[in-house]
Amino acid sequence: MADKTFRLEVVSPDSELYSGEATFLVAQTTVGELGILASHAPVLAELAPGGAVVVTEASGERTAFAVQGGFLSVTGESITVLAEAAQFVSEIDVAAERAILESAEPGSHKYLDAKSRVRAVEALS
Image 1 (cartoon, rainbow, N blue to C red):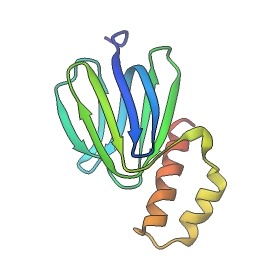
Image 2 (image 1 turned 135 degrees about the vertical axis):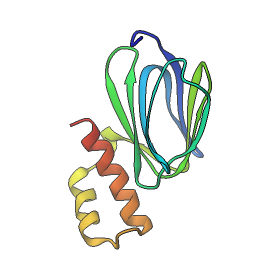
Image 3 (image 1 turned 30 degrees about the vertical axis):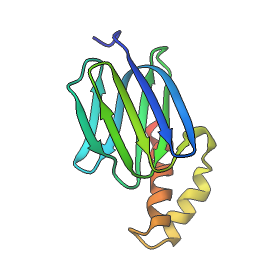
């Protein structure tokens, strides 16, 4: 089953961050963490504040995105991550984000953004 792929789009209001084929996706939603393989039943879920999306690409490479809110739309053939804001894990300064987590008010927008970024980096560690 792992050799089956699905079309994945990760977009935010200002950019398309990813477009390609993937075999597995994990996302934090407001009702818990959700793992998706090809041919998953249709789902529409709200992405959790401070969450991340981890993708296993068709090539076997793994990547992650820090995602600040939005929605996850799953159809039989494709998945779209519609993020309010998103960032590639490769663009994240994890030390700076951990410092923000220590100093920011838990639950604040600044705290949740930093939590999202740290979570994305740690997902690939």
